[in-house]
Image 1 (cartoon, rainbow, N blue to C red):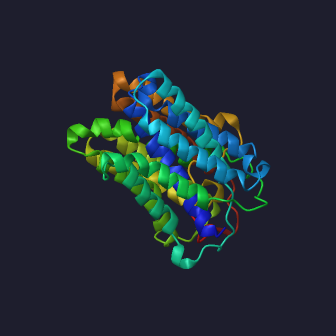
Image 2 (image 1 turned 120 degrees about the vertical axis):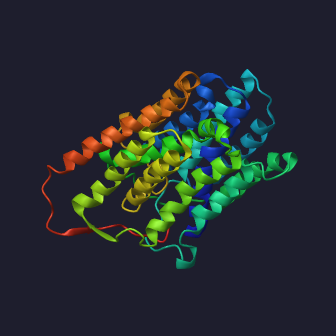
Length: 350
């Protein structure tokens, strides 16, 4: 299977997971955690499955089967009416989807994708996700759109025969950009509900989030950020962007503060993902269960608190991430500086 096809399958499974599962949680009217529980479950299980070495344990033919099962589940859940059985079915689907996403989380060799495809998979996956989730299609077509797109991704996503082993355990500072990006995507539909009073349409909210997640990594690969940074600054820049973004979000609740703050958080992850292959599909597999569950736990807390606190629950979560980033940033100043610069890892694949 060409590496471009695998990259497209991975990005499609990822973006559709963030957006479609959240949309179904909202549609089914689940009062538990404001409908974000399926997303939090999918996020946590995907991280744990991947770090447990699931891609290496499965035969390459298993990933398409998991994708086909995910597509069939999406077709069934999409027709389910709000009820307890629908909620259970959505959680089961989130579990299968997590296994599929984890099975695709294998590295593509550096330079394997053609230069003409650089940035293509995430942008194409974002366009397909927007088509399926923004109401751009008639109701009947929209019902079939997500399963068809997922089935296409399942057909394309056949990992290499011998995938690489999981990466070494990253530090807490390494996990922060991915956690912030995941929290931003997981609260998409909560943000949509809060921003509707400001005149934002659901399509606008979805496109802003997808743009932050899919387009910014492409821009970082176009050398709009420096290609070479000294080792301390290669680590400090994402942390500084996280701290700054959290500060902007805490400074106000207006649309401008939200856009600028979210943009800084997304840029922090994009710069960080350019250095760490495993985090090119946020959030990356984390080696320690505590850090793996940190992001989903924050998302679940925001969903539970949001009915009474509104946007403040999300701002509190970002303040925790920003505070942790600031502490990690200060800690990097105590480390000795290596004598040679550390080049940012670049690859034609996302």
